[in-house]
Image (cartoon, rainbow, N blue to C red; front, side, top):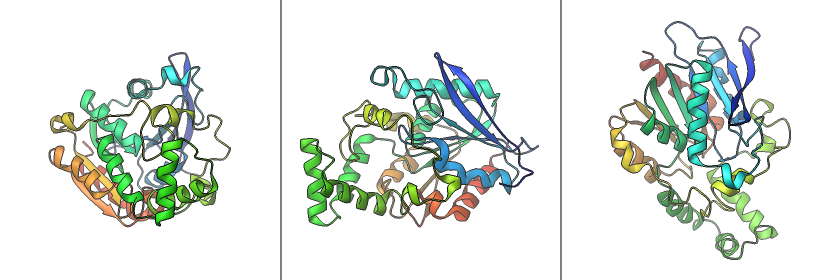
Length: 300
């Protein structure tokens, strides 16, 4: 990172826990801050750090945080009881207040985009624009498309994944190999352990996959957790926040998934880039340019 770009970290008290955040850059006149929301559920902010370039090159402050139970933030005492879409929405409300982000842009990737849309339906005040990056508005449609994409794998791989969802044995070598191939095709062309240092977790995740298992389940193809049946489709027509939807050509957030959002939010714009679910990492310059143009158009 350029030495002239300020960076600070801190924590916020939240429900007896600590939410960790990172702020890159200063608030420049005429440029509103960008608050980013990571995916998972249960991931952390590191893979979004490619957006640091908006602070380095465009003079825009970028804010990251790890949701409680994730990354650098406190572990939840009882994940099964406490983790919920409502808790994470409440945390987002508190973080904006804590950081004084009275007016800002928000960008959510994958689960982060789901949370951003849920938040926009309930708390639109002060949000200048919203970027929904490779996210569904309906888990039911997401699962339909995931199963369809799974069907394009070699037959033995597709069958191995389907069998694992029936018997719960995800540790078989053939299941792990099939899952890795699905992820390479549709989630991230470069596995996390092969990513550049600036967007890779510097340590093994201390929280493991517990939040993901509670919220989603054990698989990309069956939701057994708290997000089962989750949808904001009915609320999207009332969203008046200018919205950009981004996705990749090979994304598990398929064209049908994204079209559902674009059709529902009045005036929403959609940018399709060449890549997977992590297209923001696979085409950094192109992705950041698309996002910055959109933010600039709504810096008011």
